[in-house]
Length: 566
View: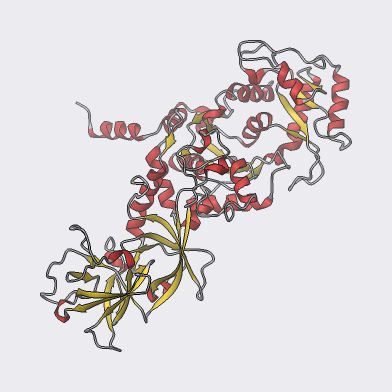
């Protein structure tokens, strides 16, 4: 018979994803002295997107779960694309997601150590300077089924290689003039072992090291060594690095050669990337959208960037919930954007303040309500949390309601405002529609109704049943607002797999701006970062451009998934 504690252990074991199981086993086996140290290593050449958020949750989350440490390391080995703007943005996004790093490192911290290692490889006859073009080198590498052809510079004398390597860093050579290649095996079935380039020339000032370096290490050469220098135990990355793992281990072994710390090494493990429908994760394409002003910027609420999601009104908890929903596997998949929205709805339903807003307004006049009279109606702030309390909303003779909530001639199942029928105005009275006034073009300009004074919400006996309930705001006690309705950025499900230019695939209806809209005054009294539910419409948040003189709200997500119906 299995004891209760054994069942608990088995249950906990089953709940671990496969990376967590590896870490758990490594710790129990005492690898790396029983230490756990991970790192999150973004290149500061753009803003983090939701794909990076999955890696952030893995790298930081696994360290939290098993009592380890996660460091932040900027992979700043390419000064052509990097900027301190991106460094600052990455830090902000990690904090917003709810994580804290142990230390901050940079690959550039190790430029001298990497240089010294490269010099050692040259002296040992394991690296050489190649003066061929990148195209020539690529052609000579062969194919997965055919061995490569050795470079004519492969057996260059060591002293000559050392002198040319120094010259690569002198600033006198143009970019592409020569590279340093590791001398490994041009017939290796793993293409990455066919004398990979480990240094190239970049004549651009580095945002940290200035003009000290002109020769910069390649990712495959710098990454594993940086992990080793820092004491990383688990180097967790995405599946595209699986073919790179043998080279990662090869360079670490070369670096460690002659030491007796055989177990003190980083180990690389891979999980699937986060791919999302109706968007792209390519930094190159996202940068093009920004530079070509096809979006407002990196934090445009249509962008899959962390700052874009934040501006759109997603909470960090919603993002983490979504990542938990899709999980970690060894198989790449295309995740449905609707799952991200479902995670947001579930989270925002519990935390958002309920308010009234009318986006497509038409005037409703309660003809038998005394002119100049007002009443304060009680409105629940959040039915999911009684501690959030109540607030008051002013009722008056003239109101704004949604134009879509009225029809002169309605189908049988239209339970909103129709002449001769009753509806309840939320938190207020039951009213019966008596007619409307139209303009010269036939557009409804005003709707008329009469209220039942005995039907006020909350009064004893006032809750006789009617089939429809409408939201409203008092015309004299509301505020104008601009409302931005955001939708999917692309009109096709998988733009990355489409042969057409990605610009042609942009959704022309990804942003609709409505003005004037009307919101109850209570909205303006809230802090600008408050999560809101516009009742019967969706979840919204203040935009960063919103001011007390001009309120601006972004739609985070609708109350239901309307895209699937389209």
